[in-house]
Length: 407
Image 1 (cartoon, rainbow, N blue to C red):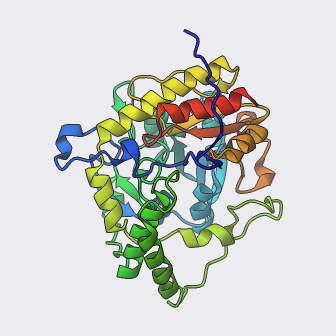
Image 2: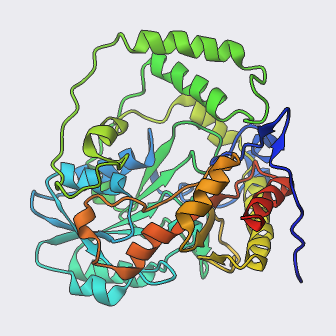
């Protein structure tokens, strides 16, 4: 059935463009809560096993590498299609990242991964891209045979399963990101499937009261409805400004610099000096924990799948190629990835109309690594991701499609 692309005026509300946020807000579906969580539960990556709450997913990854018995010079296999925040904790620990290829569907090229194994290989990192699960059982078997740690990166996939196998349960460590799926500003976690690693983890500190309040106020500001300026939170924003002034008076720990090739992109927002301060041993703030605890998971999943399916049909009618043209049962998407040689222009067009766009893999940790994987290089340049989260409506999906229809 063909989808009719309606014409939507991108200017509204006194000539202000509509704003489509990249992450969930407290408006609409994201505000659906319930005191009795069991009535609306949906399986997530953190439901079983021992979980340590962290400030964000990258901090969880860093903690995971810190508790592995790895030594400087050991090699960690990571996907060629990556974000630099994945590589920083590897290099910071004195380890050597080695990149393996991915296939067109973003699954692991097992032949290439096996070819990259050496006597110094100690761990493998696997990503579930954009919420779509990567088959894990063969990787788990390989890691067991080779005595390797398996890190399951679920930063894009908080919910989901692959052929009845729930994601996040086969890794020695599994990392998760909350702010991509829940209306919070801070929040991550590491799940330990390896008891030996769990025994090495100490109790990480709670954040100080100032940081707890700042995180709550950041959430109220950043996760508020962007189409309702001021929206009753003006007092909280003033309180946040005062609080931030107090925090800046606190002593600042020096940032450890990590070496990176001179060939790295000079305009990358992921240089070591920029991202080093975003890693922390603090636990997830209390306010984020409460939002996570009471969010209606079933409604979250339903709306994400519904938005993805609806927008998918419209964009295919426009001749745009989705990275994943089907939404299998059990998959809960993070966003909708499109592949186009005009990716940069289309992303800029959407941004100019208030639509927030993600560009995972746009930058490499070391630009000198380009060329090792043709698929990764192509997606790095030609893939961008459109939000479809639970706070968005069918009207929002029509708005996005209308902009692209008039490109």
